[in-house]
Length: 455
Image 1 (cartoon, helix red, strand yellow):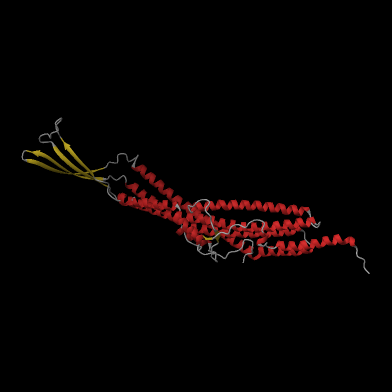
Image 2 (tube, one colour):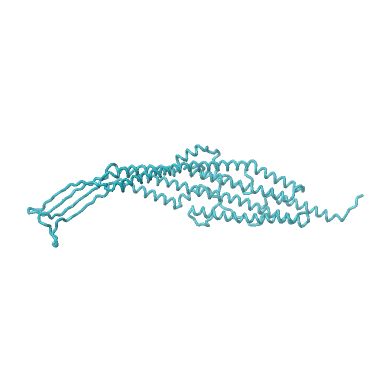
């Protein structure tokens, strides 16, 4: 026969309540339902593809219009330098009496003169080569401006993608922390929890809210930056970026370097600038050659038997009497400019090779780490959370262990979004450096929930 000790009833009731609340906690740790949200969910945004952003930038950005207009202006200068200087036409009245302005007998006449300066030694041809090379360089820089705008827009696009992904995880974490904070408070009320757990949950909740506010501000800043490139109002809404499908195979570094040296517009423009400087140096060598001046003259004066007409032919040349301070100094200047163009081209090639190496290293790093997160880090973190949940149910781990495991998992999920954005930035950088499209911007990867596991 067993005696029932009614004095243990309150203790048994407390244990029952504790187990019941622990079960609720297990349910609460799972991704919360919409009804459990403690704050209104953000308004869903329309998806936006990178291709549409790039097309808008190229269509509306005034920098590209200015570059195209500069190229047209440079091309328009070519015909003027390849033509002879304008001839000079003079009309004169010679040997007239003063003050009655009558032609003097025998020597008074009316004269018409036409003079033409003719550059020699192929100066016109060399001047045409100089301006043509400069115009080609200006036109090539239009491509560089286009690539630069595409790269800048892509960078902001991927930053917004990372911000949206991390914000989604942060909001899910905030809802989870709110539920955990409520459960910890209830457990503390029945005497089975610690006040430190309640305080820690509230601190984490406040810190997460602070992070959300900061990330939302960063998202607003990046939206304004992208709208500036799109020539839109700073507060114009920007949809949720969709990550394009990246190439499966990573290109080799050597092939990227060769592609950049051959196709990068800024390098081609630098080579064309060097050609212009070399032709300008040849032109300066020939400036000391005297230019020929040809002229014809027609004169008419009254005579006893009628008007007397006369004609003259003239030939002359410029005299380089200040060659030491003019033509020879022009040679020195042209040679110096040619040396500058060669040095600038060599520096740009070296910088391009270094930039390609950095972008390739960033691409490899982001791709490998993202793969590691998907295949190893996140599955292990999820397994840790699952194990902590089971252990928390039977009381073998404390509240803080469970909280830390879940927060670590959410941090890894946020870092995966950042790594995906970094891979996109690396592809955009390589496209700018190589002058080639490497990623199809009109494609989109499947949507992955912010708080969900990658597939």
